[in-house]
Every structure is written in C-alpha cells, then in structure tokens.
Amino acid sequence: MDDDVWKILQVRVKQANSTISELVRAAVREKYIENASNRKEALLAAIGLWKGRRDIPDGETYVRRLRKDDRLKRIRE
Image 1: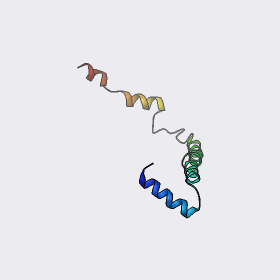
Image 2: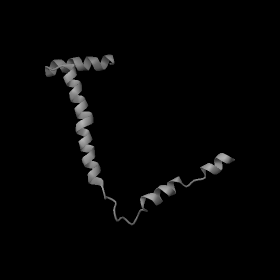
Image 3: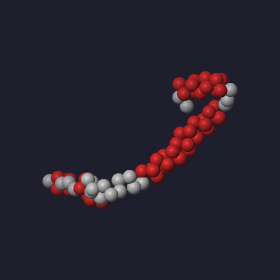
Image 4: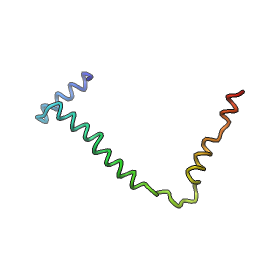
C-alpha cells in the first residue's frame, strides 16, 4: 500500500474509531457492490430508449458503416 494511502487510512481509523479492515470492506462495498446495483438499474432503465427512432439506422447497419473502410486495401499496398 502506498504511504499516502496508509497515512489517510490511519487518520480515518482514528476519526471513525474503526479498523483498517472495516474501512476497506466499506470502501469495497461502496465502490463495487452498491454502485453495481445502481449501474444495473441505470442500464435496465435505458432498455428500449432508442426504440422506434427513425433518425438513426438499426444497430447492425450502424456498426457495418463504421467498420466499412479501406484498411485492408491500405495494408496490401
């Protein structure tokens, strides 16, 4: 662990009357567990968001247009 991180943890341990292990577990939960459920909710809310739009092509057409280039031709030259 970096010295600056260790020093910050030592200060937080004293402030929170806690242990480093408890602080690390709480940080992991906050970063990877609670946010994961928030991300899942956001992704689920976005499903169908662009459904029925006429100003953009369907996904496959869009990707094919992006991938259409002359890269192979340039490589051969």
